[in-house]
Image 1 (cartoon, rainbow, N blue to C red):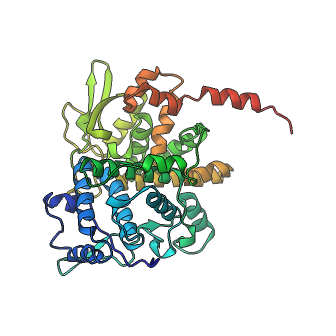
Image 2: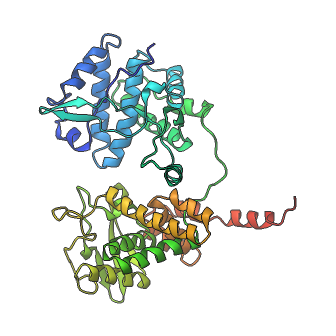
Image 3: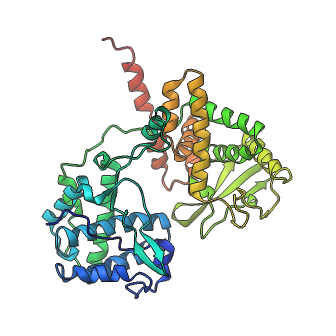
Length: 428
């Protein structure tokens, strides 16, 4: 059983993948993939059939969302490579002990299968897609806080992890089980696999930690949010290019937005006209998860930030009915808006600015937390701060939760507060 990494990526990115006809197995511009899969039939005769069924699974399951495609592609691809290159067995023939072996492999993969940075799968050479030799199915990562702390204390411009830093988070392990279970449900429906044993493997897995702590969502404290808002606003007063930063953080926190809901996507380009007025009330139309639209109530206080941002762009007051101006003016004029990655970068710049200010003012512990934040913390921060003052059904509707219980579970932690209060006065 070889532990060397002598495999290659199997599936292209979202758009090229769906540009192929459903019945077309291999792309003509990527002959290396076809050659590799065919070579696998020497040890696993069913390799091409495995590949066909997984490709069909991705095609039918993930068309609606690029993020969903990326998640299932990564796990399906990794599973196939392990099955062929290491386990030498078709995925159709996997039994409980085989899946257990795969979970052991995912938790502790060979170092040769681990990369130290996320890489593109393919590069173009003379019109053909060639494998990126640096690509690996697993990637060792330093946390955002670890990386930024290292950069602050070192003279180098970048800090890279070592393959020994690889560790599979519990959340990621749960996603492995979930993604595999969905895959095997499809294979069973297509009469390609005998059954789905993923649930049984998950139940008995020694690697999965049962968490009953009811951890609260990740959010900024009132002090941290005040520093983020005030430092970004002060920077925007000095430098008008920061007006976009200010509008982004105010929108995500006040309107409970995900980064994808601010970004331009193939099916949606947010516009200023998505803000609209009904009598004395303002609303914002959001295109969210599951291809669902919802309207979010707009607080009066937020309108000042909306006006301010529009004025910085040379626009009048508040949006007109059906206004077609991009919600976030793009960096490149030909783009219809900002991509999620760009929004995340701008948000992180605001977090970093606030972190530096907190260090200057002596709040070093709070500043370190800001180094580990992500854009999603702003959505959680807004909802957590508002849960005490708003009816739960109203908050749930603005968040876009399908069930009231989801909002209650994520943001209402009365029992934790009571327990913390009763335990605070314990003596050593």
